[in-house]
Length: 569
Image 1 (cartoon, one colour):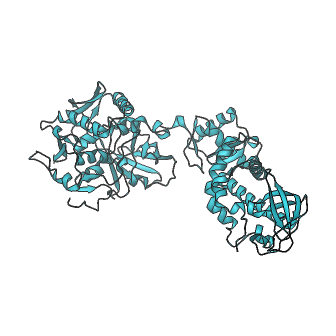
Image 2 (cartoon, one colour):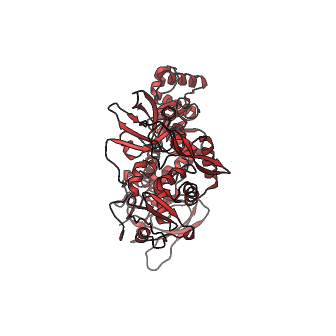
Image 3 (cartoon, one colour):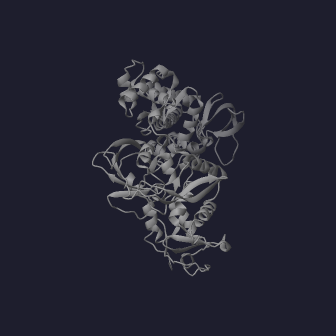
């Protein structure tokens, strides 16, 4: 039979909603740190605290049993005696009076009147040895039962509820300090002043590579008080709060470098890459568009399930955001060449395929790009639409970059982008392009800063991708005798307004009735169908509202699920 009173630490409601961190709990956690003499993770502190609360309640129950003061109707009590009531969550009361009990069904017994700590009073029978839930042995009333969870089970089940409460309490207590999930006491923190940090900066400059704090301490030999772990924690915390330094490692394995030695895009996402339009997967696109998407090589389109070329080389076309920021795409194939953890920035080496010269760059997996190509782009005369091939190297964390110089250096007509009245303007100009490129995505940019400013203003205006596709279509179509624009050119020009993958642009073309495919990747526009969308794959392929005789029908598929051609497509 289950006991009447279950221990509080066995109750789900205690851990899930009733648990609070008081000064008593904070004192205990302080003792944990003082005993260890080194920082502790939140998990370590929560585990220690939960086990302490469980053990304390067990010890309290054991004392109550040994004292014999747990109320049972069969026992007798005297005025002034203190009792614990298991059916009232171990509430404490004092016997204030007794009187004879009167009930013809029972033999003589006594009624005791008790006063609880909250000021209320109540009467209970005593000396009444009858069958009753509270007349069981004391160990059944306050001890463990077969229904109870083991200590480890309590921890595994309820620690996720306790941890946020403990973390909030530590944040609110000025005696505690934390760094990346690890906590310590301010009073035990070895002090690293600005002079120490200047020495750390010099050590990184001298090394020329990121350094862990353990190596910094060995190089600096500061002779500070405190345990090794306390010094490591303190230095990590000091570096994290100094703008000169940046952790290019992980949360658990910090590796520190200097922001001044890194390209800006390796430190933070550039504005031209901000808030990109990404595919979500299962967008409808034309089957022939899949080869175009792969040829463009935009990292934003690199979704699990998307068809990719498994060849040795990785190719991409340089978009304006990458050209301006000095970055290059790092899609799934490229990322698979490296070992890294979330949040890490990985220093890598890039080799110029033209001359074998190498230079440093940074792989930023969380952003999906490699930073540090700005100077190389300038050296090779890179343009929007330029073709780059990436090859893995036998050397660790090293990639080879290749571009092709055209055999002919003669001038030709080239699309050129400019900004007028807060809008992108495209026109044909005579120019000479020094690298191999895709004519469909090629756009020369005379004033990159003006385009970057346009992108910043577009970001603030929150214009939809559909509106941007319409705007660039009008600019591109005016340059074509047939009034058409290729899907590649639309993608390239949209990326001068707002960062976008190719798939979101192509999905708009596929589902919007006002756009019609007319072959060779070109699309036409019919303003009379503005705002109308095709709902089914069949309609997206057949384009039943189209008035064109040169319509090019294309099978429609779900992107990133290309093995499943849509019904009727």
